[in-house]
Image (cartoon, rainbow, N blue to C red; front, top):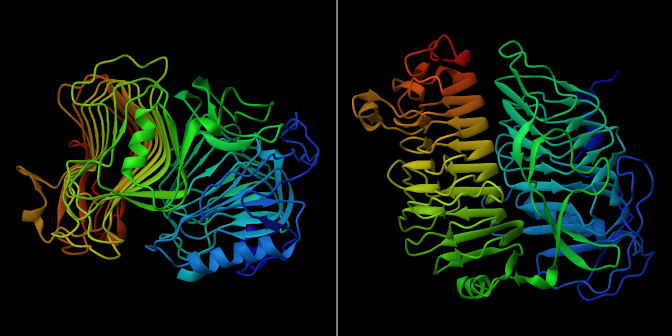
Length: 598
């Protein structure tokens, strides 16, 4: 069998000739009005609903229709990609949305671009071609391929495979890929996230350092491993063979809710689908038919467009409305206050919030059922206590029946500009679910420096029974993650310590050398984590040492499974993996592993 790498030229920069087109807002569409396919994993052609009228989703959303002329859609896709291919810290944001039907598309996805189908099921929108991410712009190195997304599509890759060569904050969700999937582009790649997907062919992880696959179906299996490959609730996943190869398999997700998404129903009306809370899950939500959940009419949302601000958002939230935040960069002069139970705040196209004047960007009350999804929160220049807080200090309500959930919520401090925040995300409410979080103190770009983009800690958890799938936290100046609540669970943790401590004296936690990447505080009696990795690259002073990567109470209720530490290129040292246990990762021994603790 020819390897996907050998077929690399088929996914070049130019790709295929399109036969689809763009439709302007307000136009009327015609077609057969029909429900979604009953067999989403089949090859049956999707049926096209009658769409009443397209909503105004702002200037940065394009909705594509399969019945319109061929060249317009490809021209738009190409123009967006050309503008966004290298725009790592640029201001533009785009959402590319496809009405149910079949398309011939080569969709090369660049920065701050979301591509998504508008069907209830992935098979309602079929792409005959490619939906891919390359690293051509960076000589095959995908370690900077952040901030992009593919969701809710079925793809028939004309080359037999698609490439999704990404690193952090690039979710691949509700996708049905009818071929192989390649996760690198021949150079380095630094980790990613896949959920609620079916891959008919084989997944080739290539150079990916680590990856989380959750509640998916890998029909053709998985090939490859480097540091940590974690599979939770995934059919067809490799067995639990850590550390050789470092595959970590957990049979089921104990409690999970999928991300909300925009779709068109069989009558042509726009809704946001809010998937139901599920327990003990395995496999996709959609292969056996329509998923469980609630359809919320778009009329119940306030659509936020570029030019709107905190006043418009807070007025809508105070009135009990949901928010659909369209692609753009929104500077906030007041905190967004989410107070009503069941509120949905859904961003499209990596919608970005920038808090000014030292405010918290988003405050969520200690209420049931809030869903926050698809947002990038970018710290402003004035220092703030936190960028987002879920529940005030002292939150105590039981939310087990209807927890708050965070999906594809990303945080950035520095890179686009100087940013400062003491913490990125504080979770005080109980039972919160985190579903793909990247918290990043920038290590490159503008406004970067030990005394410039200051940030003490990434995630601080005070609530009990908090569960996180896919936790990426990097480069904070103290602990990357601090867990104060009981009965917490983390499925996959990837963390790099800060590159830039100027010397050992600047990187001290009292009398301990360095700060642990993941600290469970004294007094916690129950906590569990699977597939966790912490890496160092102390490039400013390679003699810097961190005494441990993980610091936890030594009690039987606190358990860690499948731990990895790495000294990248031998630049710096992690003396122990967890507490005083585990080998050293440092010059001459780049990687250390531990199967379980205690």
